[in-house]
Structures are given as structure tokens and as C-alpha cells.
Image (cartoon, rainbow, N blue to C red; front, top):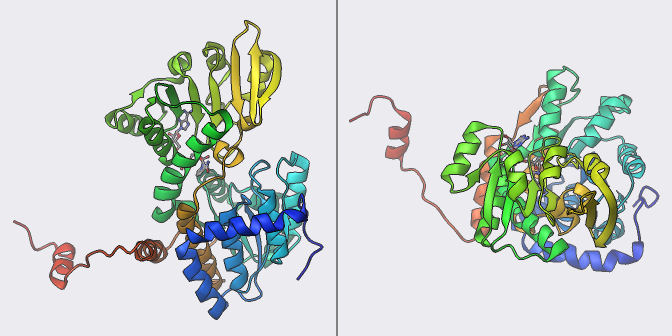
Length: 420
Ligand SMILES: NC(=O)c1ccc[n+]([C@@H]2O[C@H](COP(=O)([O-])OP(=O)(O)OC[C@H]3O[C@@H](n4cnc5c(N)ncnc54)[C@H](O)[C@@H]3O)[C@@H](O)[C@H]2O)c1
């Protein structure tokens, strides 16, 4: 066990963290099954893994699974505000070095990424591609040892595809985000529920009767809109893609440009993966008391420098709630400094959905090792077999069985001869 490779807030928080990790594990039956198999088969024996993930109870269950599989794993945070310090302490006690402190500044955040890279990874696990980008730009010498990597979120996959297009990607990476058993559940139901949870915990607002503007109607936005609607909010969607906008209309939401929605909203939630989605003119048009939150990966979706420039004063009125008073006296409230509100103000996704996302992670890492040297250097989809296996295991764990195709049906569904 190596204990000189970590940097955490307070080791004495470990016992609290251990209990919470155990609690999350109850809801992670698929990861538990994989962990048992990994413990017996050791598919990652001796493999050095550097993982940049939100340091949460669910991540802890993944990390323990990889360690059971024989991996030498080191962790750092994928966001400065999402670390659960008790979980970090517990993991260190379990013999997994963690470099992450909730609220760390940007310099420390990158110091921690570099500390994780000091492990000379053979596998990388990333959430947003900060670790992979640092590896490619600042620590490129380490790449010779890397077998492959995985990426957890939409924004990370977009960055990696751009790296691939620029012919600068140096090793194969599997886009775990793009597994159906990831985005259909984690992004939609996980982000949906936990974003509402984060805004509620930060503000204690009543959702019923509020005008909630959701910017972006992708997988995450759909989940947030659905849950806000369920709580009695009137939901307005803003989009840039006509098909998504049309889907939102047919799902029963009002759709309009942000410049119009800005005047109406009581609560704004951005979840696009894009930049300055709520920009200066929109901030200028907002009602007194409007609440602004972001659940997209980076804190660039709300133009915070513009908000700062418009404000005559700023104070922290509640934990994670900053009140900006504009020159004309209107007040706007920014939650969690514009960072992922579900992780900063709540606990992130419930364990039950992370069970599937992280099952994909564990199985894809095993796949990478099994196929070392034979995968092309590009961003790969999750193998269909793994995606289906995760869905099947999850259904089994819920006690649900489904039908199987009969030979007659199989033939019918694969033939072109049979028609009317
Ligand atoms: N909070 C979390 O825990 C969590 C979980 C998963 C994903 N994410 C992040 O959330 C973001 C969205 O992920 P997703 O899976 O929903 O992506 P997605 O690609 O399915 O959806 C994004 C949507 O935003 C729209 N969009 C882009 N620019 C816009 C703009 N200026 N105005 C309005 N709409 C715009 C796009 O057309 C698209 O429909 C990403 O940054 C992703 O990494 C966060």
C-alpha cells in the first residue's frame, strides 16, 4: 500500500465516507457482480490506472472494483467542487491514493491531475477529458505506456473527437458516455433527478408554479425538464437544433429563444455542453430574483464574467448561493459558482444509475486490456455486447425477465423474402 501519493482534506473523515460508500453499494448490484468476478479473475492484474472522476460514493465503488481486479489505481477529481472529502479519506484508508479536495483552486486541480499522471498510467479513465488533455499536451512522454482509456461524459467525448479529427489522439479511447446503458439512464434520469435535488438543497425553492427555463434539450435537458414538470413547474426549453426543439414542443413544453425566455424565467438551468448560453444581454433582461444554475460539464455555460461586470455588489447569501445586485437594484442568484449544480449542491447521480455507467467503465477497461495493441487509435463506441450485458445484468438485479426471440421470429426479422 502506498500512502505518499495522496492529497486529501482530512483523513479523519474516513469512517463517515466508508459508511456512505457501503450505502451506495446497496444500489449498485451490477458493479457488485463485476467486483466479485474481478476478485476471482484479476483481469487488471498489475495494470496502472489513472482515473479523473467526480470523487463520490459511486466512484469509490468503481475504484474498489478495479482494485479488486488487480489494478494499481490512483484518483483525482474531475471537478474542483464535486469532491466528497469523506469519500476521498475512506478511499485512502482502503489503499487507493486520491488527490482531491473539495473547493480546490485551479492550480491545485491541475496539480492533482499531474499527481494522478505520476502513476505512469497504462489505462486512463476520464470525465471531461482534462486528464487526457494534460497527458497529450504536458506529459506526452508518458503516452508510450498507455494501452487505452475511457471517457465518461458528453463534453469529454466531444473534446476527444476533436483531438482525433486533428490527428492528435495518441491512443484508443472508448466513449463510455455513448453506451445506451449510460446516456439513456445516467444523463436523463440521473442528471434529471439530481439537478432538481441540487437546486432544491441550495435554495429550498418550491418548484410548483415556477417558470423553469432549461437550456438544451439533449439527454440531460430532457430529464431535468421532465422532473421540473412533474413538480408542477411551467417548463420553457431553449435549443439550437431544430429536431430537438421540435421534440420539446411535442413533449408539451414551450420553446423559444433564450433572449425571450430570459424575461420570463424564475429558474434557469443550462445543460448544453456549450459556452455563454446565458450571455450578457440575457442577464440584463432577467427578472429580479432569478436563479441561475448549470448542470453542463464546465462552468462556462453561464457567462459569469459578464454577470460580475453587471453587478454593483455580490454577497454569499446561503452556502453555494451568490447574490449579484445589478446597478438597477435587480438581484440574480448564481448557484455553485456555475459549476455542476447536481454534484456541488447535492450528491450527484443516484447510485442506481451510476451502477450502469460504471459497469460499462469496468467492462470497457477489461476489454481494453484483453485487446491491447489491436485497437485502432480512435474514439471507439462501447462494444454492443457490453452494453447489452449491462442492461441484462441490471434487469436481473431488479428481478425482471424479458422474452427471447423464437427461431421463427429470428428468421422473420432477418429475412427479406417474407412480406405481406
Ligand atoms: N451534471 C451531470 O452530472 C452531467 C451528467 C451527464 C452529462 N453532463 C454534461 O451535460 C452536458 C449535456 O450533456 P447531454 O448528454 O445532454 O448532451 P446532448 O448533446 O445530448 O445535449 C446537449 C443539447 O444542447 C443543445 N445546445 C447546444 N448549444 C446550445 C445553445 N447555445 N442553446 C441551447 N441549446 C444548445 C444541443 O443542441 C443539444 O441538444 C454536457 O456538458 C455533459 O458533459 C452532466
